[in-house]
Length: 220
Ligand code: GS8
Image (cartoon, rainbow, N blue to C red; front, side, top):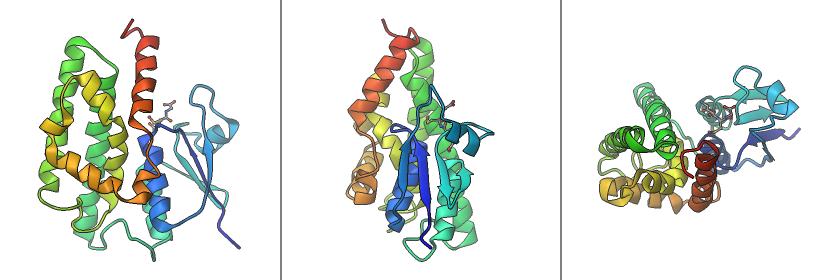
């Protein structure tokens, strides 16, 4: 019997984009269900009763939550095609460390940069740029974070590319000047169809943040 694979997500979620890329890398067909975060569906509440967040991955009726957990599950279940995590235990641990860094630093500082002004914005932007530079140091001269092949750390970070335009516009800095190697890496990742077909449009994300800023009284 064929696997029943469902992804519950929201179009601008970098976490959801990770799952789309992982499934595309593995060549897995799935049903996509777009969520409404203002009015959460009974399905989302049932499938993720703990955090009530997207993405949720439902495999043959069984839910799996938290994007990095989901990607690891996908990599283990469909292990024959395009492995995402390295097989060496030390390198696996390192890849998970950097994915965790991306969640703690890039997501948090990026969101604050997009949703603040004044001193708060300056502080968030400073920490965001510092964190991006740390990642740039880790990338070094490599093609991808894991070496020659696109893998877990690339997949964890590249969805945030769709937020880069919002970061640099609301943070008033040049991503290309601050992080030239990371910009080139992002362009390399985008050459892969599994990535380009899974990402949201930067301007659409920017427009969304613009509306949120008005809603929260950050801009007039
Ligand atoms: C984060 C999911 C998340 O923040 C993961 O899957 O990796 N650590 C989790 N999801 C957001 C949408 S993306 O910004 C979400 O569902 N928010 C709804 C809410 O907080 O109520």
